Length: 487
Image (cartoon, rainbow, N blue to C red; front, side):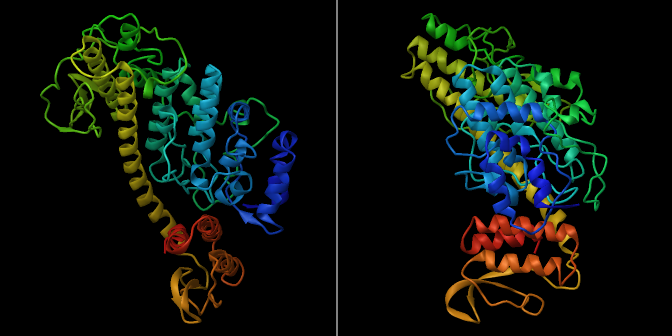
């Protein structure tokens, strides 16, 4: 649907009450023109949105105007992003800072809100269009780094991807002592119809519904079952937020019993909570990797106090194996491997057989988790880019009566002595070159919407590409715009 600035202001009334300048910034971002996107849903999970807002404001280091901006498309999000430059990372940055603040306050509920907020779907330009992943930075908190946002349920592969996001979220919730079943509440709506920009009947957006209209109107589609949540958490070592047998032993000046070490702590073991837990498994952390046909997918190579523990991937029904214990998903297996390595390192530190401290072992465990999260993220980004290219290329096919909207960067016919931006097709997009990319991209988007009579999906992709390009320079800016349109 066409979503005007006045409508956008209405959905931010609640934000404006706390931040009077938020509405002004949104108006400035959109001016008097219209912008197109899917039916708004940024307030659908209101209880988590308001919860993360409260945690963020304990120390809002990036001067973000309001957390709700992170759930908008980039063009609208820019108005309230504060000091955050990469708008694709705004949601992660807010969740990460809110988690840090809540953790410092020993506030499990605040950390829970931050984790769930990180997993919420962002608005995009049309039904079936996935939102961009954060590629330029890694969250400081490994719990946040382990999660990405839900994608439009009508986008390619969304069912499987969103289910995995929910399971990953459940593991991280368990890691901080929260109810992992809350991960189901991060889900989104039923898929809309591709080509229908209204998404009528599937979404809701009510900032006055403090619980969240997706819950009160019974519109939530859960991505997994309660049993699948329990299984994912169990595979990761149970409620492992407080599991730290090696550190307990170190504090007591005792050597950890590696036979009974609870090796299932959550990402980084850096969350709030006490150090006592009974939620690990009884795997033998001293044993070597079981001889299983497959390949080692552990991306970590550090060997402080102990060598990395292999994570064997095979074609088995439970495809990942660590020291003979099998897992359904790679994340749980990696977590086990990192924890087992930490326990072995702590044993070496406590026995004096290696020149390391238990603090070194803890740091290495966090590095192990981060290294594997980074490797997994790169794979997801690669898959996402492939899907996005197909989706956007299809959308770009309908440019109405005009040709390719691609732009170029370099020496232009009318500007031979310096690099500049220009439309490649000067017949349909006849405009002189410009030093600022926005001059060209805004012109092309305007032509697509008026002269060319292009589809709404193409115009929406153009506007998002234009917004993304303005944050970049040179060839990177041209590539961002062209990539958004699949040209």
